[in-house]
Image 1 (cartoon, rainbow, N blue to C red):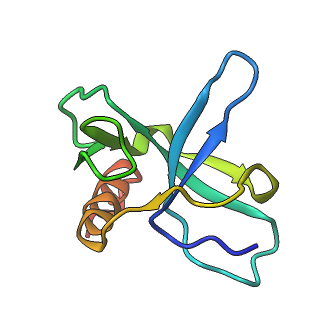
Image 2: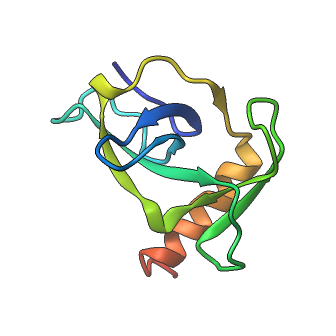
Length: 107
């Protein structure tokens, strides 16, 4: 399986976690050494920080939502089934900027 940046999946975070929508933020790589994708959670809670990107209410979201890049997680591909939606390219550009900020990759 190869995931693509911007794909949104429902992921069961298990033990005390919950099923949560997460967006793939890692690059598409069919030759990756591990079957993992880096994903950021989608939340409805906004804390007015540079770590969050407003998505609005996309067709696959129940309400106005945000991507929280502070919640970055590596997700194994066997935990993914099929994407429930895709984040628009303009919003993915904002998510990449938030990741640069979070990882102190500013130029």
